[in-house]
Length: 584
Image (cartoon, helix red, strand yellow):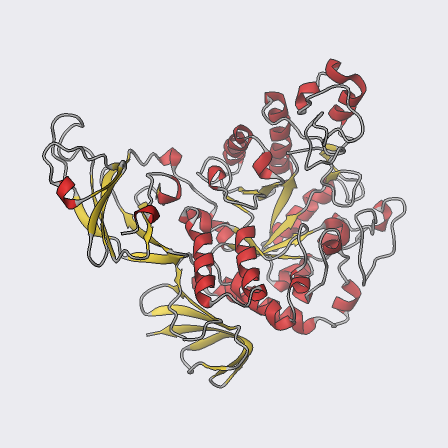
């Protein structure tokens, strides 16, 4: 047996309560393993620990598994009668049988040695306060990310000095202003509702000198070039009236150079009462201070000094800002920028304070890597699922990858966290920080194929403004172009919009597409054909087939076609998409 591949721990994504009664158990093994049993029972079924008891437990087969690269991920769900569990594993290959405990793997002969200890895995107690609960509404939401300065100019009266005419075509820079504002978003709510959007994620709206607003000057004020408190309140109310939720962007890792406490520090140095609000290593400081490590900042940006969220005063100030967003505007979600650099103590306090006000508030972190330390149920509900985005895009970029490689990487994305976290992961293919999807693919066929994957994966899908028209754009700042409303309203993009609208509609109407359960049957013997099923009851599933081969393939007609592109009779053409419901 491949001993190095075997791994389990009695916490995090390997052992956790799904709810008040169900405990999920996962174990990773090598591909040589054919059979896994869990021997489990109550820790005190044979007596008090240390009292000379002989604990045995009951054997249960672990029936479900997912394939990873060179490994298998086995999963089962148990309902401990007394809310606690003691267990170990029996692992079988074709010719071997081993037993896996917390202190390692032992043979059958060792198991039978009289007096030998058995250091079992233990989940001590399913405390209700420790169960990771995520907002149910997020799984049913289709998000639309808006970069306000470039979405729509609804009120020219608040335009900043030097505002340029709205640019329907062409590239942009971060130094240019076009007058987009909150009134512009309000004006387009009917358009968004018609598209099928049920959640808006707005990049920062607080006062800041830049177009992107990630260099906050005043956390307590709506940027006057975007509007004011009344406009913000109206936006939320009008969105809610249409069944659309609102999520604001919290820039709490760093501030801008015009933030009043920072200005005082620059003026007074250590004598400022705000000196310890920042991570200053050396005073005085000058040009290039961040790279010289005189103070810490976002990346090496001198004009974005890092806030010290280890400081209780800083935490209290920022938590007050968030409380105001929830109480004053009734927002439904808060996204934390550069969330992996903010102190864990702040994130824990944020969750406790905000959930006390609004229990179903969605707390999202911008983390691009493994985020398990933030997703244990006491900090964020989810993170932006950039690993999923990269896994999807890589398959179209790297033609050497097979459908098995696609299966491995998708399964990796969905075995890293708890199931209730997967339900609300913020799935995206592009954003204000990346190239636009249309500029990342070779043609419109690849564009819609990737969107089809996005809208059929577990989690909560988000499209970036303009994705519905396949807007182009390179890396930041070119991904922040102006929305071409004249062309949209002139009908130039009607066909593209309808294709995206139909995917959104399908996602909302077909519960299985939102469900966490999926597998890769690999019945089609073509290496570049993606094939997976979203599973409900045994007699009902949704099949997703995406042809990335260089030639057409035959797919016998079966079930009810829910969505198709380049599927004619029983032929799925090159670059085709087929989504259908199968009932047995």
